[in-house]
Length: 196
Image 1 (tube, rainbow, N blue to C red):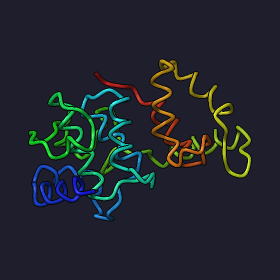
Image 2: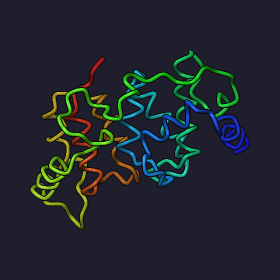
Image 3: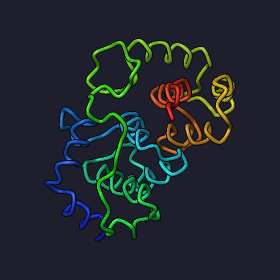
Image 4: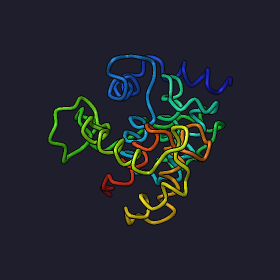
């Protein structure tokens, strides 16, 4: 935890980190949801497997969201990975340039978005569609098993390793099942075109 404390001290007041944080938490709620974090961090250009490791280190208690300190940990680990350093807690104390992300000047992270959303997230109309699909798969006690979700994911035509990472990022509580919100995340990520 000393590494996390020193990171907060290092990142506090850093205008680059503050700017990135404001983009994912414009209301300053102190929480960055998994969708916002995943979509923002994907702009780093790092492979999904690396981003999954970064998430696990930034959210060590499995809360399913990042507080400001956790987001700073994620940013620092992205910077480490972009500079050829290991993605590990021991790397947090290294001096590296701030992380770089594609198109961070725009509050809308989707180049093809036709809405004026303040950030790239599951839009209400998409959430309604995903909720309908969720209900059509007959959830048990509000949850869908991996077996029930698998055909939906396979239909995306993404490689299996990518689908595995999408599942890992979406199954926030790591229980092997998806609730309605987790299902919206998994479906959104599987349907979102990946721009190289």
